[in-house]
Image 1 (cartoon, rainbow, N blue to C red):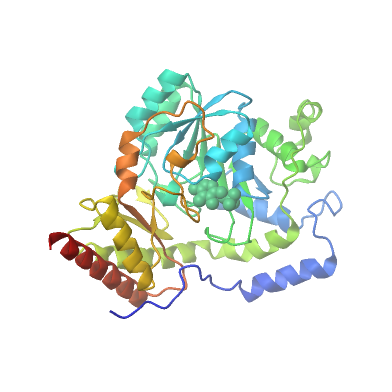
Image 2 (tube, helix red, strand yellow):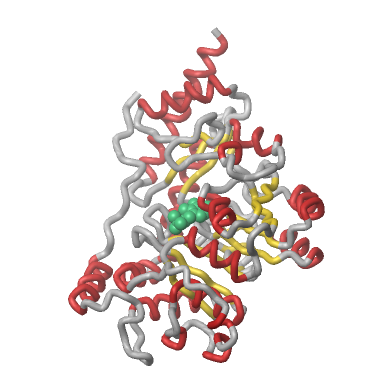
Length: 401
Ligand SMILES: *Cc1c(COP(=O)(O)O)cnc(C)c1O
């Protein structure tokens, strides 16, 4: 079997237009977002305006990371020390981390076979805990039935915060991910959909929430310098009582992001071309079950998830190793020990009185996850699928002898 020689971590270079914009910022020396006069619009201001327009939201704020934005989102919707916060269990560690950072209590909710939140368990957990906040993480771009989520949130008075680290550019039934709840949070970390190394973005239509976020992000008393935030009246009372957590975005990152945002829809098409090609190659193997997606889900295929439902833990281990030896890097969510970026709810032992999640454990036990960098081609997807199928055949043959 021919080894696959491309790297799963390779990125496309930053475009020349973005490099030029970054150089211009460096030549000016004005990197800090408030290093300007009140009426001026610098790259951070323009990024916020362009992002709010992109999503059709009233307000937008750029910050230092998505994890930081989640913390601001929680705090701005009333989460404080000891507040119970519901969260779907299939997510990345910065999500429970943001809840912990507020001193709040994370209430993990079961994951369904489609990798999204289990609505029945969500209702049960809300009733049992009395929680009135939901941090919904659209992990790996899998979007729950937002009609059902919204209807539950409305009927129970639950405030919704969306973690859109993997759904920038995605929609549910035509409506952009991140515009369903009270507030949406996005990442611009290198592995997400636009790349500034580190960075985060927040959108909301709520004046009070945005005013709190701006102050907490570290605006000092320069909130009137913002162009995608509410007017000064919204800040009058809050300025005395809102702490500054200092997590701003700078003009250098914003300059690099603006041309990428303009190209986002095109990048989404390119990701989905790779995703559908690989999904179609993989679906030929009866051992592979692809994560089911609702037709209303307009996702971004920047990664792909599949299950090997008949595989034991030992077989999974062998399979992952064989793929790795042939150059195909797969993350396995059922692994007992957290490695690299991949950890599961069982390893977040800082969560007090964690709920038992037997269904999630079962779902994750054979869950495989592959990154699809835009540096890959459809031909590469064919090669990768060939290696995966070859490794599956080897493992199942070993088992039957
Ligand atoms: C990456 C990621 C985050 C955190 O984003 P950062 O910008 O790295 O803080 C949050 N949620 C999910 C699902 C992620 O993948």
